[in-house]
Amino acid sequence: MTTSELTLPQTRERKGRSRRVMGAGKQLHAGPVTYIVLTVFALVSLAPLVWTAIAASRTDRRLAQTPPPLWFGGNLFKNLQAAWDQAGLGTAMLNSVIVAGTITISTVLFSTLAGFAFAKLKFRFSGVLLLLTIGTMMIPPQLAVVPLYLWMSDLGWSNQLQTVILPTLVTAFGTFFMRQYLVQALPTELIEAARVDGASSLRVVWHVVFPAARPAMAVLGLLTFVFAWNDFLWPIIALTQQNPTVQVALNSLGTGYVPDQAVIMAGALLGTLPLLIAFILFGKQIVGGIMQGAIKG
Image (cartoon, rainbow, N blue to C red):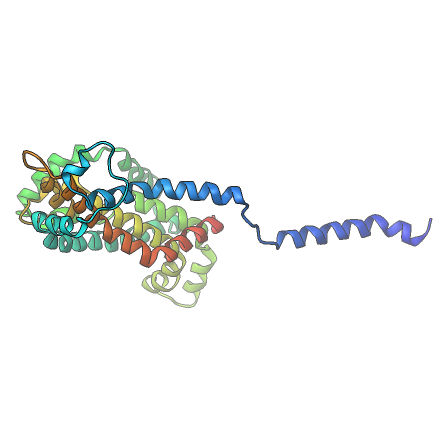
């Protein structure tokens, strides 16, 4: 048997390995079926928003007719102005920006710190405290309405924005979310190296934890902002029409003997625009954060 015959299986094995390596480096391309499915899902997702815009551009009489309108009318700006004036959306928008912005910043900050503590720091009863934190997520928020209202009344904060802000400065979901991310994304060796270099706890958090947690912080920030902006149950109890958030102000559009559905839809469209603007401005960073977290996980 010749030397070439002895090395033939090894040569074939090497060629197979090189082909697998070259195949792993190729970028996957979506086929036409993928684009069709994604297009259908996009259209279904956009349908409620498009219908809201169509209804906001029509009159209440036209919306009551059959079949309903399927294209835009000429009353959009008139209905938007009517909704803005009737609901007092100027003050409501400002209040919602203050409430949602404060809740988002505090939740992201405190949840990141708490998640880092549960993920990387060793202290007594950490497992029990984490279980208790997660357990609070199973309590219906409706059960806390009465004692929370009595507490805020005792503090003299009735119909003030801090009544809505204080109960949601940090959330159990945000803490658990950041803890699960930092367990995988933040190497313990990196923290120990910073400690060896003489970094204080504050410096470790600022220069090590926050940069590693930035993708998850962006995702949590978007989710928290959307939740705080759309929150209705507690604000409608704690606030009045004299000092409302957007959702409380929009509730006034549905009052009356015959509510104007076109104006209500215009108000709903105005209340949705800030969320759309936020996603357009920060959507790329948020999607990048989700993908980066998925790769690290």
